[in-house]
Image 1 (cartoon, rainbow, N blue to C red):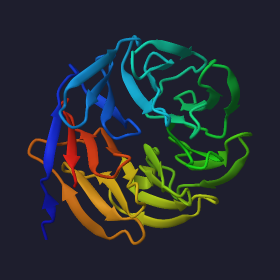
Image 2 (tube, rainbow, N blue to C red):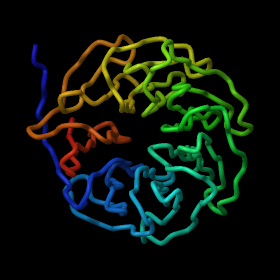
Image 3 (cartoon, one colour):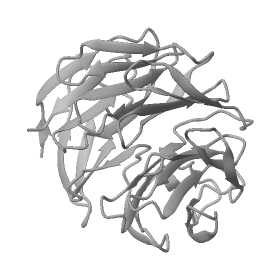
Length: 302
């Protein structure tokens, strides 16, 4: 049965190289995208109009995250740095240079916008002050690269996803780094954890990439509750807590029921392949995704 939906689509084509990361403003009106062209760009989600370009990085920008208070954006990438800059002016506020590996999607703000967790290919996660750049502590629980980091909505826990040889999801206490639980792969050849997304109430955690499954875990214990043999590397939880969005292997974005794993529908358009980034808008009315054609698409759901 073909349940593919082709809703209204807004496109953004401001980058000159591949786009690998996206983040919405808290009010759902703007998006920031990071690219291999070394820039992060802010643009209007309703019109696709360019607003601002940040040029502080010297190499590919692989992770961007808008702060919950809307004032700042954090960006990181292949230059081994994380920059915090003004979402209004593009002025650099802090440059964090304490990690020794690439930052690839591993970036998260605390809910109060005061701290940042950055995961790196140096196998660590650093938790640091977003205003001063001071390192608070370093989490060293992974034996492989760290590809994904997510801060729980209540601010008490941080989840991180590793690459081979551990390929695990680990949940730990945000203020101390104490391990609370971990989800371990069954097979040694498991794929890396490429994406993590908390449910809005913080009770569940979705992980994409582990053993090529889309997995839903208990947010306290990391116990696996639901596994979909979906081949997903990216996942985003809907703001109402009911749905999961994940990229489809042959292009587009699939929607699943979070509680049962039942397939709901697919959002797709011609020429949209190899999804590199995916994010549900905070108001739940749109999905932003980018394929391998450098074009960012906003699918209007309502």
